[in-house]
Amino acid sequence: MGSTTDKIKGMANEAAGNVKQAAGKALDKPDLQAEGKAQEMKGEAQQAIGKGKDAVKKAVDKI
Image 1: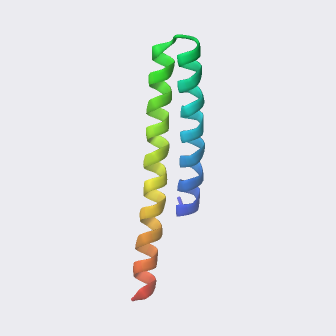
Image 2 (image 1 turned 180 degrees about the horizontal axis):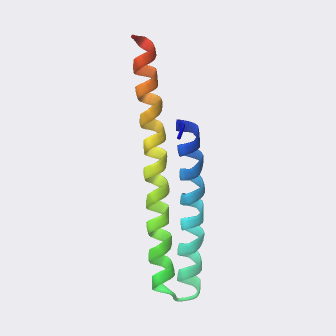
């Protein structure tokens, strides 16, 4: 996967996770809140991977 794809999927997972957390809180469903938090964290990790790939590419391009 490319860095841009990782970052886009990460943003989508983070947004979906936030929606699930809000829905879980509104509906008083802790399990849905927890699922949303996990998805948000997955999205944050995906974005970090994409940024890491960008950093490596920039470093390699300088060589």
